[in-house]
Amino acid sequence: MAGIRESAVDTAEARLRYLETGQGPALVHLQPAGQWGLTRAHDLLCQRFRVLAIEVSPDATASAVALALTKLGIGSFDLLGSSRAGEVAVQLALLAPERVQALVLESPARPDRARAADGPTVRLAIPTLVTIGTRDGAGEMTRAFADQIADAHRVFVYDAGSAIGEDRPEAFAEVVIDFLERHEAFVISRADTVIHP
Image (cartoon, rainbow, N blue to C red; front, side, top):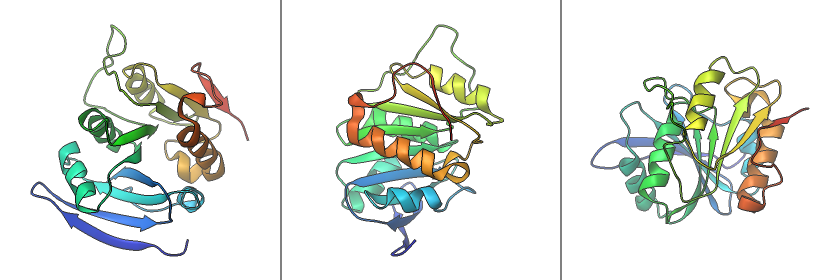
């Protein structure tokens, strides 16, 4: 992957490290600390997007991320949240729906909260896609998180664990690009769908 820049941005709340690559519309990828980095999927995504992979610590807030993006000169953007950073991504989409054009969640996890028994609890004003690996050991947690988001598309990626972008980079990049370019005209229906090899 050529043209990778590593830097950090300071806000009153936190210092956020990020990696940047590619050109085009901004795609902000929130990743949990310990899982921060670029994969083959980013190599494919950066052919269409300016990708910023931001490390999100356990105490990071959506407002800190929003301020950091403002400092970086990023107005509107597509948003990708992986694993535990998915919750910050959802909060950012709720905080700044005028800036977030679409949201993709990669195996989102929220282990400290139980599944809502009475259906979806979060309504986002933007197109949302949840991707789940069929080999994901935390799959039930991911499904529980996804069930709490009303009107989200769900795609199961065959033979992928929770790190879908690493396990199946081409399949992951293909579905993410299609969703971000087409939004509600997305080729996958709202029914649960599995992507095979």
